[in-house]
Image 1 (cartoon, one colour):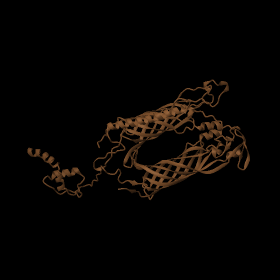
Image 2 (image 1 turned 120 degrees about the vertical axis):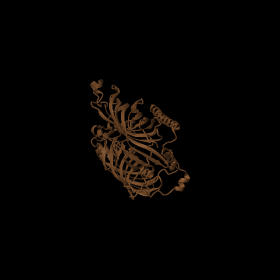
Image 3 (image 1 turned 90 degrees about the vertical axis):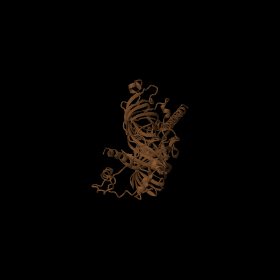
Image 4 (image 1 turned 90 degrees about the horizontal axis):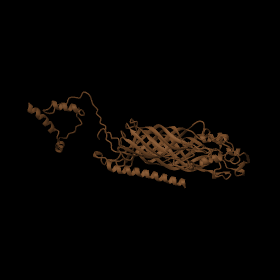
Length: 296
Length: 288
Protein backbone atom coordinates (compact mmCIF):
# COMPACT_ATOMS: atom_id res chain seq x y z
CA UNK A 1 0.00 0.00 0.00
CA UNK A 2 2.78 2.40 0.89
CA UNK A 3 4.48 1.71 -2.41
CA UNK A 4 1.27 2.23 -4.35
CA UNK A 5 0.59 5.49 -2.55
CA UNK A 6 4.09 6.75 -3.23
CA UNK A 7 3.89 5.87 -6.91
CA UNK A 8 0.52 7.56 -7.17
CA UNK A 9 1.87 10.69 -5.50
CA UNK A 10 4.86 10.67 -7.81
CA UNK A 11 2.64 10.42 -10.86
CA UNK A 12 0.38 13.21 -9.61
CA UNK A 13 3.40 15.42 -8.90
CA UNK A 14 4.79 14.72 -12.36
CA UNK A 15 1.50 15.49 -14.08
CA UNK A 16 1.07 18.65 -12.00
CA UNK A 17 4.57 19.84 -12.94
CA UNK A 18 3.92 19.20 -16.63
CA UNK A 19 0.54 20.94 -16.47
CA UNK A 20 2.11 23.91 -14.68
CA UNK A 21 4.75 24.21 -17.39
CA UNK A 22 2.14 24.09 -20.13
CA UNK A 23 -0.16 26.62 -18.43
CA UNK A 24 2.78 28.89 -17.64
CA UNK A 25 4.03 28.62 -21.19
CA UNK A 26 0.60 29.28 -22.71
CA UNK A 27 -0.03 32.24 -20.44
CA UNK A 28 3.29 33.85 -21.21
CA UNK A 29 2.88 33.21 -24.89
CA UNK A 30 -0.26 35.35 -24.86
CA UNK A 31 1.71 38.22 -23.44
CA UNK A 32 4.74 37.93 -25.63
CA UNK A 33 3.52 37.50 -29.13
CA UNK A 34 1.93 35.02 -31.37
CA UNK A 35 4.99 33.45 -33.03
CA UNK A 36 5.69 29.91 -32.00
CA UNK A 37 7.40 26.85 -33.38
CA UNK A 38 4.13 25.38 -34.50
CA UNK A 39 2.91 28.51 -36.23
CA UNK A 40 5.65 30.14 -38.23
CA UNK A 41 4.23 33.43 -39.44
CA UNK A 42 5.60 34.49 -42.79
CA UNK A 43 4.83 37.85 -44.34
CA UNK A 44 5.98 39.53 -47.51
CA UNK A 45 6.72 37.74 -50.77
CA UNK A 46 6.96 34.34 -49.03
CA UNK A 47 3.41 34.51 -47.66
CA UNK A 48 1.44 31.53 -48.86
CA UNK A 49 4.52 29.78 -50.20
CA UNK A 50 5.06 26.11 -49.39
CA UNK A 51 7.04 25.35 -46.22
CA UNK A 52 9.94 23.97 -48.25
CA UNK A 53 10.99 24.42 -51.87
CA UNK A 54 13.44 22.16 -53.65
CA UNK A 55 12.89 19.50 -51.02
CA UNK A 56 15.32 16.64 -51.49
CA UNK A 57 13.45 13.34 -51.58
CA UNK A 58 15.74 10.94 -49.82
CA UNK A 59 13.28 8.07 -49.77
CA UNK A 60 10.55 8.43 -52.39
CA UNK A 61 10.69 5.25 -54.58
CA UNK A 62 14.25 4.58 -53.47
CA UNK A 63 15.97 1.65 -51.86
CA UNK A 64 18.06 2.02 -48.72
CA UNK A 65 20.68 -0.62 -48.11
CA UNK A 66 22.31 -0.42 -44.72
CA UNK A 67 25.05 -2.56 -43.22
CA UNK A 68 25.06 -2.05 -39.45
CA UNK A 69 26.73 -2.84 -36.18
CA UNK A 70 24.50 -3.27 -33.13
CA UNK A 71 24.72 -4.14 -29.47
CA UNK A 72 22.16 -5.01 -26.83
CA UNK A 73 21.87 -3.21 -23.50
CA UNK A 74 20.15 -3.99 -20.22
CA UNK A 75 20.78 -7.72 -20.46
CA UNK A 76 20.91 -9.66 -17.20
CA UNK A 77 23.64 -12.16 -17.98
CA UNK A 78 24.89 -11.79 -21.57
CA UNK A 79 25.15 -8.97 -24.09
CA UNK A 80 25.17 -9.48 -27.83
CA UNK A 81 27.35 -7.70 -30.38
CA UNK A 82 25.66 -7.97 -33.74
CA UNK A 83 26.71 -7.42 -37.34
CA UNK A 84 23.98 -7.30 -39.92
CA UNK A 85 22.19 -5.54 -42.72
CA UNK A 86 18.92 -3.86 -43.48
CA UNK A 87 17.08 -3.05 -46.70
CA UNK A 88 14.13 -0.67 -47.00
CA UNK A 89 12.04 0.40 -49.95
CA UNK A 90 9.95 3.54 -49.67
CA UNK A 91 6.78 3.94 -51.70
CA UNK A 92 6.50 7.50 -50.46
CA UNK A 93 8.98 9.83 -48.86
CA UNK A 94 7.35 9.14 -45.50
CA UNK A 95 6.32 5.49 -45.82
CA UNK A 96 8.25 2.34 -46.54
CA UNK A 97 8.75 -1.32 -45.77
CA UNK A 98 11.93 -3.14 -44.93
CA UNK A 99 13.63 -6.20 -43.60
CA UNK A 100 16.69 -6.67 -41.44
CA UNK A 101 18.88 -9.42 -40.13
CA UNK A 102 21.99 -9.86 -38.05
CA UNK A 103 24.21 -12.38 -36.36
CA UNK A 104 25.67 -12.13 -32.86
CA UNK A 105 29.37 -12.18 -33.61
CA UNK A 106 30.27 -11.94 -29.92
CA UNK A 107 28.49 -12.41 -26.61
CA UNK A 108 29.87 -10.68 -23.57
CA UNK A 109 29.11 -11.85 -20.05
CA UNK A 110 27.79 -9.16 -17.75
CA UNK A 111 29.44 -8.32 -14.48
CA UNK A 112 26.68 -10.24 -12.65
CA UNK A 113 27.58 -13.40 -14.57
CA UNK A 114 31.21 -12.99 -13.57
CA UNK A 115 30.22 -12.41 -9.94
CA UNK A 116 28.11 -15.57 -9.90
CA UNK A 117 30.91 -17.52 -11.56
CA UNK A 118 33.30 -16.33 -8.87
CA UNK A 119 31.13 -16.34 -5.74
CA UNK A 120 27.98 -18.39 -6.33
CA UNK A 121 27.16 -21.10 -3.78
CA UNK A 122 25.63 -24.48 -4.65
CA UNK A 123 23.62 -26.62 -2.24
CA UNK A 124 20.95 -29.24 -2.79
CA UNK A 125 18.39 -26.48 -2.30
CA UNK A 126 19.55 -24.58 -5.42
CA UNK A 127 21.41 -27.27 -7.37
CA UNK A 128 18.96 -27.10 -10.25
CA UNK A 129 19.58 -23.36 -10.58
CA UNK A 130 23.35 -23.50 -10.19
CA UNK A 131 24.86 -26.99 -10.56
CA UNK A 132 28.36 -25.49 -10.48
CA UNK A 133 29.39 -21.87 -10.35
CA UNK A 134 32.37 -22.34 -12.69
CA UNK A 135 30.12 -23.42 -15.57
CA UNK A 136 27.47 -20.79 -14.98
CA UNK A 137 28.23 -18.89 -18.24
CA UNK A 138 27.41 -22.12 -20.11
CA UNK A 139 23.85 -22.27 -18.79
CA UNK A 140 22.68 -18.70 -19.48
CA UNK A 141 20.41 -17.90 -22.40
CA UNK A 142 22.00 -16.51 -25.58
CA UNK A 143 20.51 -14.69 -28.54
CA UNK A 144 22.36 -15.94 -31.60
CA UNK A 145 20.68 -14.34 -34.61
CA UNK A 146 18.08 -11.70 -35.33
CA UNK A 147 15.80 -10.79 -38.21
CA UNK A 148 12.56 -8.98 -38.85
CA UNK A 149 10.22 -7.11 -41.17
CA UNK A 150 9.05 -3.61 -40.37
CA UNK A 151 6.89 -0.77 -41.61
CA UNK A 152 8.62 2.61 -41.59
CA UNK A 153 7.08 6.05 -41.00
CA UNK A 154 9.13 9.21 -41.47
CA UNK A 155 7.00 12.11 -40.21
CA UNK A 156 9.86 14.36 -39.14
CA UNK A 157 12.55 15.66 -41.44
CA UNK A 158 14.71 18.73 -41.48
CA UNK A 159 18.23 20.02 -41.62
CA UNK A 160 20.97 20.20 -39.09
CA UNK A 161 23.93 22.49 -38.52
CA UNK A 162 26.98 21.00 -36.86
CA UNK A 163 29.35 23.48 -35.19
CA UNK A 164 27.64 26.07 -37.42
CA UNK A 165 29.94 24.89 -40.23
CA UNK A 166 28.62 21.62 -41.59
CA UNK A 167 25.03 21.30 -42.77
CA UNK A 168 23.13 18.18 -43.70
CA UNK A 169 19.62 16.78 -44.02
CA UNK A 170 18.25 14.62 -41.24
CA UNK A 171 15.06 12.76 -40.41
CA UNK A 172 13.46 10.53 -37.81
CA UNK A 173 12.25 7.10 -38.90
CA UNK A 174 9.69 5.35 -36.67
CA UNK A 175 9.16 1.69 -37.36
CA UNK A 176 7.07 -1.21 -36.12
CA UNK A 177 6.99 -4.85 -37.14
CA UNK A 178 7.81 -8.40 -36.18
CA UNK A 179 11.16 -9.86 -35.20
CA UNK A 180 12.47 -13.42 -35.32
CA UNK A 181 15.22 -14.27 -32.87
CA UNK A 182 17.37 -17.36 -32.62
CA UNK A 183 17.32 -18.21 -28.91
CA UNK A 184 19.62 -20.71 -27.29
CA UNK A 185 18.64 -21.76 -23.78
CA UNK A 186 19.38 -24.42 -21.22
CA UNK A 187 17.62 -27.66 -22.22
CA UNK A 188 14.70 -29.07 -20.25
CA UNK A 189 15.59 -31.02 -17.15
CA UNK A 190 13.93 -32.37 -14.00
CA UNK A 191 15.52 -32.06 -10.59
CA UNK A 192 15.52 -35.26 -8.52
CA UNK A 193 14.70 -36.65 -6.04
CA UNK A 194 12.61 -33.73 -4.79
CA UNK A 195 12.06 -30.02 -5.25
CA UNK A 196 14.46 -28.11 -3.02
CA UNK A 197 16.64 -31.17 -2.39
CA UNK A 198 18.12 -31.95 -5.78
CA UNK A 199 21.14 -34.21 -6.08
CA UNK A 200 20.78 -35.30 -9.71
CA UNK A 201 18.79 -34.39 -12.82
CA UNK A 202 16.87 -36.21 -15.50
CA UNK A 203 17.69 -34.91 -18.94
CA UNK A 204 17.17 -36.24 -22.44
CA UNK A 205 19.40 -39.28 -22.89
CA UNK A 206 20.55 -39.30 -19.27
CA UNK A 207 18.11 -40.07 -16.47
CA UNK A 208 20.87 -40.03 -13.88
CA UNK A 209 22.82 -36.83 -14.40
CA UNK A 210 24.69 -36.64 -11.11
CA UNK A 211 25.03 -33.15 -9.73
CA UNK A 212 23.05 -31.87 -12.75
CA UNK A 213 26.39 -31.08 -14.39
CA UNK A 214 25.27 -32.44 -17.75
CA UNK A 215 22.03 -30.53 -17.47
CA UNK A 216 23.94 -27.31 -16.93
CA UNK A 217 25.61 -27.44 -20.32
CA UNK A 218 22.90 -29.12 -22.40
CA UNK A 219 21.30 -26.64 -24.79
CA UNK A 220 18.17 -26.26 -26.83
CA UNK A 221 17.51 -23.86 -29.69
CA UNK A 222 14.31 -22.25 -30.93
CA UNK A 223 13.06 -19.27 -32.90
CA UNK A 224 11.20 -16.67 -30.88
CA UNK A 225 8.71 -14.36 -32.60
CA UNK A 226 8.22 -10.96 -31.02
CA UNK A 227 7.01 -7.46 -31.80
CA UNK A 228 9.70 -4.96 -32.66
CA UNK A 229 9.57 -1.20 -32.78
CA UNK A 230 11.86 1.75 -32.45
CA UNK A 231 13.16 4.98 -33.88
CA UNK A 232 16.11 5.89 -36.01
CA UNK A 233 17.90 9.19 -36.52
CA UNK A 234 19.24 9.43 -40.06
CA UNK A 235 21.57 12.03 -41.51
CA UNK A 236 22.46 12.25 -45.21
CA UNK A 237 25.80 13.62 -46.36
CA UNK A 238 25.72 12.79 -50.07
CA UNK A 239 22.96 11.98 -52.55
CA UNK A 240 23.62 8.29 -51.98
CA UNK A 241 25.14 8.14 -48.50
CA UNK A 242 23.92 8.61 -44.96
CA UNK A 243 24.30 7.40 -41.40
CA UNK A 244 21.68 5.88 -39.11
CA UNK A 245 21.58 5.77 -35.30
CA UNK A 246 18.79 3.47 -34.20
CA UNK A 247 17.14 2.15 -31.05
CA UNK A 248 15.03 -0.98 -31.34
CA UNK A 249 12.95 -2.63 -28.64
CA UNK A 250 12.09 -6.34 -28.90
CA UNK A 251 10.14 -7.65 -25.88
CA UNK A 252 9.86 -11.42 -25.56
CA UNK A 253 10.25 -14.19 -23.01
CA UNK A 254 13.22 -16.46 -22.55
CA UNK A 255 15.09 -18.15 -19.73
CA UNK A 256 17.87 -15.64 -19.24
CA UNK A 257 19.78 -17.46 -16.50
CA UNK A 258 18.93 -21.07 -17.28
CA UNK A 259 17.27 -21.32 -13.87
CA UNK A 260 14.10 -22.73 -12.35
CA UNK A 261 12.33 -19.39 -12.14
CA UNK A 262 8.90 -20.69 -11.13
CA UNK A 263 10.49 -22.99 -8.53
CA UNK A 264 8.64 -26.14 -9.60
CA UNK A 265 11.69 -28.37 -9.71
CA UNK A 266 11.69 -28.52 -13.51
CA UNK A 267 13.47 -26.39 -16.09
CA UNK A 268 11.22 -25.96 -19.08
CA UNK A 269 9.36 -23.33 -21.10
CA UNK A 270 7.44 -22.23 -18.00
CA UNK A 271 10.63 -20.68 -16.67
CA UNK A 272 10.87 -18.11 -19.44
CA UNK A 273 10.60 -14.58 -18.11
CA UNK A 274 9.72 -11.32 -19.84
CA UNK A 275 12.66 -9.36 -21.10
CA UNK A 276 12.54 -5.99 -22.79
CA UNK A 277 15.48 -6.37 -25.13
CA UNK A 278 17.04 -3.08 -26.20
CA UNK A 279 19.30 -2.86 -29.20
CA UNK A 280 21.32 0.14 -30.36
CA UNK A 281 22.49 0.24 -33.96
CA UNK A 282 24.93 2.30 -35.99
CA UNK A 283 24.55 1.89 -39.73
CA UNK A 284 25.79 3.30 -43.02
CA UNK A 285 22.98 4.00 -45.50
CA UNK A 286 23.53 3.53 -49.24
CA UNK A 287 20.68 4.97 -51.30
CA UNK A 288 19.68 3.59 -54.71
CA UNK A 289 19.29 5.06 -57.26
CA UNK A 290 22.15 7.32 -56.23
CA UNK A 291 20.69 10.54 -57.67
CA UNK A 292 18.33 12.44 -55.40
CA UNK A 293 15.13 13.97 -56.80
CA UNK A 294 13.81 17.31 -55.56
CA UNK A 295 10.38 18.89 -55.43
CA UNK A 296 9.50 22.19 -57.18
CA UNK B 1 26.35 79.72 -58.47
CA UNK B 2 25.05 79.61 -54.91
CA UNK B 3 21.50 79.22 -56.17
CA UNK B 4 22.63 76.44 -58.54
CA UNK B 5 24.50 74.71 -55.75
CA UNK B 6 21.45 74.89 -53.49
CA UNK B 7 19.20 73.60 -56.25
CA UNK B 8 21.16 70.38 -56.88
CA UNK B 9 20.04 68.54 -53.74
CA UNK B 10 16.44 69.48 -54.47
CA UNK B 11 16.76 68.03 -57.93
CA UNK B 12 18.37 64.90 -56.60
CA UNK B 13 15.62 64.45 -54.05
CA UNK B 14 13.02 64.94 -56.71
CA UNK B 15 14.66 62.23 -58.83
CA UNK B 16 14.34 59.74 -55.93
CA UNK B 17 10.56 59.97 -55.90
CA UNK B 18 9.14 57.37 -58.22
CA UNK B 19 5.55 56.96 -59.20
CA UNK B 20 4.08 53.72 -60.45
CA UNK B 21 3.33 55.28 -63.88
CA UNK B 22 6.88 56.46 -64.25
CA UNK B 23 8.24 53.06 -63.51
CA UNK B 24 5.91 51.33 -65.90
CA UNK B 25 6.59 53.78 -68.72
CA UNK B 26 10.35 53.79 -68.39
CA UNK B 27 10.83 50.23 -67.41
CA UNK B 28 13.41 48.56 -69.64
CA UNK B 29 15.33 45.36 -69.36
CA UNK B 30 18.39 45.97 -67.25
CA UNK B 31 20.32 42.84 -67.93
CA UNK B 32 22.76 44.02 -70.60
CA UNK B 33 24.57 46.76 -68.73
CA UNK B 34 28.20 45.94 -68.10
CA UNK B 35 28.24 48.23 -65.16
CA UNK B 36 25.41 46.43 -63.45
CA UNK B 37 26.19 45.45 -59.94
CA UNK B 38 28.61 48.26 -59.12
CA UNK B 39 26.41 50.94 -57.63
CA UNK B 40 29.21 53.38 -56.80
CA UNK B 41 30.60 53.24 -60.32
CA UNK B 42 27.16 53.89 -61.78
CA UNK B 43 26.57 56.89 -59.50
CA UNK B 44 29.96 58.32 -60.41
CA UNK B 45 29.15 57.88 -64.07
CA UNK B 46 25.82 59.67 -63.59
CA UNK B 47 27.62 62.67 -62.04
CA UNK B 48 29.93 62.97 -65.04
CA UNK B 49 27.04 62.90 -67.50
CA UNK B 50 24.58 65.24 -65.93
CA UNK B 51 23.42 66.49 -69.33
CA UNK B 52 22.33 63.12 -70.62
CA UNK B 53 23.30 59.51 -71.13
CA UNK B 54 26.79 58.80 -72.34
CA UNK B 55 28.60 55.70 -73.41
CA UNK B 56 29.39 53.32 -70.60
CA UNK B 57 33.07 52.63 -70.18
CA UNK B 58 34.07 49.00 -70.11
CA UNK B 59 34.51 47.63 -66.59
CA UNK B 60 38.06 46.64 -65.85
CA UNK B 61 37.18 43.71 -63.54
CA UNK B 62 34.13 41.55 -63.54
CA UNK B 63 32.53 41.60 -60.13
CA UNK B 64 30.30 38.75 -59.06
CA UNK B 65 28.14 40.04 -56.27
CA UNK B 66 26.25 37.56 -54.12
CA UNK B 67 23.60 38.39 -51.61
CA UNK B 68 22.64 35.78 -49.01
CA UNK B 69 19.24 35.71 -47.38
CA UNK B 70 19.85 34.35 -43.90
CA UNK B 71 17.00 33.42 -41.65
CA UNK B 72 17.30 34.53 -38.05
CA UNK B 73 17.90 31.84 -35.46
CA UNK B 74 14.50 31.06 -34.01
CA UNK B 75 15.48 31.35 -30.35
CA UNK B 76 18.64 32.91 -28.98
CA UNK B 77 20.14 31.62 -25.74
CA UNK B 78 22.70 34.38 -25.28
CA UNK B 79 22.50 36.10 -21.87
CA UNK B 80 19.41 34.16 -20.88
CA UNK B 81 18.75 32.07 -17.79
CA UNK B 82 17.39 28.60 -18.34
CA UNK B 83 15.25 26.89 -15.68
CA UNK B 84 14.66 23.19 -16.21
CA UNK B 85 12.48 20.93 -14.01
CA UNK B 86 12.73 17.27 -14.97
CA UNK B 87 12.21 13.69 -13.95
CA UNK B 88 15.01 11.12 -14.05
CA UNK B 89 14.83 7.39 -14.66
CA UNK B 90 17.85 5.21 -14.01
CA UNK B 91 18.55 2.83 -16.88
CA UNK B 92 21.28 0.50 -15.74
CA UNK B 93 20.50 -0.49 -12.16
CA UNK B 94 19.23 -4.07 -12.44
CA UNK B 95 18.38 -4.33 -8.74
CA UNK B 96 16.47 -1.19 -7.72
CA UNK B 97 14.15 1.03 -9.74
CA UNK B 98 15.29 4.56 -9.02
CA UNK B 99 13.37 7.72 -9.83
CA UNK B 100 14.56 11.27 -9.36
CA UNK B 101 13.04 14.69 -9.49
CA UNK B 102 15.45 17.22 -10.92
CA UNK B 103 15.92 20.91 -11.34
CA UNK B 104 18.60 22.69 -13.34
CA UNK B 105 19.63 26.28 -13.90
CA UNK B 106 21.94 27.39 -16.70
CA UNK B 107 23.20 30.80 -17.70
CA UNK B 108 24.14 31.15 -21.38
CA UNK B 109 27.17 33.39 -21.66
CA UNK B 110 27.41 32.73 -25.39
CA UNK B 111 24.76 31.41 -27.71
CA UNK B 112 26.27 27.93 -27.50
CA UNK B 113 27.95 27.82 -24.06
CA UNK B 114 26.33 27.80 -20.64
CA UNK B 115 27.37 27.33 -17.06
CA UNK B 116 24.93 26.02 -14.51
CA UNK B 117 23.92 23.64 -11.76
CA UNK B 118 21.58 20.70 -11.61
CA UNK B 119 20.04 18.90 -8.66
CA UNK B 120 18.37 15.48 -8.48
CA UNK B 121 16.41 14.20 -5.47
CA UNK B 122 16.08 10.40 -5.14
CA UNK B 123 15.05 9.73 -1.52
CA UNK B 124 11.27 9.21 -1.37
CA UNK B 125 11.19 7.57 2.09
CA UNK B 126 10.30 4.01 3.02
CA UNK B 127 12.41 0.95 2.45
CA UNK B 128 14.29 1.32 -0.85
CA UNK B 129 14.18 -2.46 -1.26
CA UNK B 130 10.44 -2.10 -1.84
CA UNK B 131 11.47 -0.76 -5.25
CA UNK B 132 13.75 -3.74 -5.85
CA UNK B 133 13.46 -5.72 -9.06
CA UNK B 134 12.86 -9.46 -9.06
CA UNK B 135 16.44 -9.95 -10.24
CA UNK B 136 17.78 -9.10 -6.80
CA UNK B 137 15.47 -11.73 -5.29
CA UNK B 138 16.44 -14.30 -7.92
CA UNK B 139 20.17 -13.74 -7.41
CA UNK B 140 19.76 -14.16 -3.68
CA UNK B 141 17.53 -17.22 -3.97
CA UNK B 142 19.04 -19.06 -6.92
CA UNK B 143 22.75 -18.36 -6.48
CA UNK B 144 22.91 -17.72 -2.74
CA UNK B 145 24.51 -14.38 -3.37
CA UNK B 146 23.78 -11.24 -1.43
CA UNK B 147 24.01 -8.03 -3.38
CA UNK B 148 25.27 -4.98 -1.50
CA UNK B 149 23.04 -2.05 -2.39
CA UNK B 150 23.12 1.65 -1.62
CA UNK B 151 20.27 4.09 -1.49
CA UNK B 152 20.64 7.59 -2.88
CA UNK B 153 19.52 10.84 -1.32
CA UNK B 154 20.46 13.53 -3.81
CA UNK B 155 23.07 14.72 -6.27
CA UNK B 156 24.22 18.26 -6.96
CA UNK B 157 26.47 19.19 -9.86
CA UNK B 158 27.99 22.25 -11.52
CA UNK B 159 28.05 21.86 -15.30
CA UNK B 160 29.14 23.30 -18.60
CA UNK B 161 26.81 22.92 -21.56
CA UNK B 162 27.83 23.20 -25.21
CA UNK B 163 25.49 23.17 -28.20
CA UNK B 164 27.27 21.82 -31.29
CA UNK B 165 24.11 20.87 -33.22
CA UNK B 166 21.24 23.08 -34.19
CA UNK B 167 18.51 22.23 -36.64
CA UNK B 168 14.90 22.26 -37.60
CA UNK B 169 12.38 19.62 -38.41
CA UNK B 170 9.41 19.89 -40.69
CA UNK B 171 6.21 18.13 -39.71
CA UNK B 172 3.74 18.66 -42.57
CA UNK B 173 3.53 22.48 -42.72
CA UNK B 174 4.95 23.11 -39.28
CA UNK B 175 8.58 23.62 -38.48
CA UNK B 176 10.17 22.76 -35.14
CA UNK B 177 13.52 24.16 -34.12
CA UNK B 178 15.71 21.93 -32.01
CA UNK B 179 19.23 21.62 -30.76
CA UNK B 180 21.42 18.94 -29.34
CA UNK B 181 23.89 19.61 -26.56
CA UNK B 182 26.74 18.08 -24.63
CA UNK B 183 26.92 18.54 -20.88
CA UNK B 184 29.43 17.65 -18.21
CA UNK B 185 30.43 18.69 -14.73
CA UNK B 186 31.46 17.86 -11.20
CA UNK B 187 29.57 17.80 -7.92
CA UNK B 188 28.52 15.62 -5.02
CA UNK B 189 26.35 12.56 -4.51
CA UNK B 190 24.84 11.56 -1.15
CA UNK B 191 24.40 7.81 -0.62
CA UNK B 192 24.21 5.27 2.19
CA UNK B 193 24.45 1.47 2.28
CA UNK B 194 21.26 -0.49 2.84
CA UNK B 195 21.94 -2.98 5.66
CA UNK B 196 21.37 -6.42 4.15
CA UNK B 197 24.04 -8.73 5.50
CA UNK B 198 23.66 -7.91 9.22
CA UNK B 199 20.62 -5.63 9.43
CA UNK B 200 20.07 -6.27 13.15
CA UNK B 201 23.35 -4.57 14.07
CA UNK B 202 24.44 -2.42 11.18
CA UNK B 203 23.04 1.03 10.75
CA UNK B 204 24.51 3.44 8.23
CA UNK B 205 24.45 7.19 7.75
CA UNK B 206 24.56 9.32 4.62
CA UNK B 207 27.98 9.73 3.04
CA UNK B 208 29.00 12.43 0.58
CA UNK B 209 30.99 11.42 -2.48
CA UNK B 210 32.62 13.51 -5.15
CA UNK B 211 30.77 12.83 -8.39
CA UNK B 212 31.17 13.56 -12.07
CA UNK B 213 28.73 13.56 -14.91
CA UNK B 214 28.65 13.69 -18.68
CA UNK B 215 25.71 13.60 -21.00
CA UNK B 216 24.00 14.60 -24.20
CA UNK B 217 20.56 16.01 -24.72
CA UNK B 218 17.96 17.05 -27.25
CA UNK B 219 15.86 20.20 -26.84
CA UNK B 220 12.81 21.02 -28.97
CA UNK B 221 11.61 24.61 -28.95
CA UNK B 222 7.85 24.79 -28.40
CA UNK B 223 8.07 28.59 -28.28
CA UNK B 224 10.99 31.01 -28.17
CA UNK B 225 11.23 30.56 -24.39
CA UNK B 226 9.70 27.13 -23.65
CA UNK B 227 11.27 23.87 -24.70
CA UNK B 228 10.79 20.18 -24.16
CA UNK B 229 14.03 18.31 -23.53
CA UNK B 230 15.28 14.81 -23.00
CA UNK B 231 18.84 13.96 -22.12
CA UNK B 232 21.05 11.01 -21.41
CA UNK B 233 23.27 11.51 -18.36
CA UNK B 234 25.95 9.33 -16.83
CA UNK B 235 26.53 10.19 -13.18
CA UNK B 236 29.69 8.62 -11.81
CA UNK B 237 31.19 8.45 -8.35
CA UNK B 238 33.28 6.17 -6.09
CA UNK B 239 30.83 4.62 -3.61
CA UNK B 240 31.23 2.71 -0.35
CA UNK B 241 29.08 -0.41 -0.07
CA UNK B 242 28.21 -2.66 2.86
CA UNK B 243 30.78 -5.31 3.74
CA UNK B 244 29.43 -8.70 2.66
CA UNK B 245 31.48 -10.33 5.39
CA UNK B 246 30.26 -10.31 8.99
CA UNK B 247 32.87 -10.74 11.70
CA UNK B 248 31.06 -12.76 14.41
CA UNK B 249 33.41 -11.57 17.14
CA UNK B 250 33.32 -7.92 16.15
CA UNK B 251 29.84 -7.27 14.80
CA UNK B 252 29.32 -3.98 16.59
CA UNK B 253 32.47 -2.29 15.29
CA UNK B 254 31.28 0.23 12.62
CA UNK B 255 34.69 0.19 10.96
CA UNK B 256 33.98 -3.38 9.77
CA UNK B 257 30.57 -2.59 8.32
CA UNK B 258 31.67 -1.17 5.00
CA UNK B 259 33.98 -2.53 2.33
CA UNK B 260 37.62 -1.45 2.47
CA UNK B 261 37.79 0.15 -0.94
CA UNK B 262 35.39 2.15 -3.01
CA UNK B 263 33.43 0.85 -5.96
CA UNK B 264 33.06 2.96 -9.07
CA UNK B 265 29.38 3.54 -9.76
CA UNK B 266 28.05 4.79 -13.10
CA UNK B 267 24.39 5.67 -13.01
CA UNK B 268 23.14 6.14 -16.54
CA UNK B 269 19.78 7.80 -16.67
CA UNK B 270 17.28 9.48 -18.92
CA UNK B 271 15.95 12.86 -17.85
CA UNK B 272 12.82 14.36 -19.36
CA UNK B 273 11.49 17.82 -18.68
CA UNK B 274 10.78 21.35 -19.78
CA UNK B 275 13.00 24.39 -19.86
CA UNK B 276 11.96 27.97 -19.49
CA UNK B 277 14.26 30.67 -20.85
CA UNK B 278 14.28 34.01 -19.03
CA UNK B 279 13.78 36.72 -20.01
CA UNK B 280 11.08 35.41 -22.26
CA UNK B 281 11.71 38.27 -24.72
CA UNK B 282 15.00 38.86 -26.48
CA UNK B 283 16.29 41.10 -29.23
CA UNK B 284 18.34 40.14 -32.24
CA UNK B 285 21.59 42.04 -32.75
CA UNK B 286 20.71 42.68 -36.38
CA UNK B 287 17.17 43.53 -37.53
CA UNK B 288 15.25 41.17 -39.76
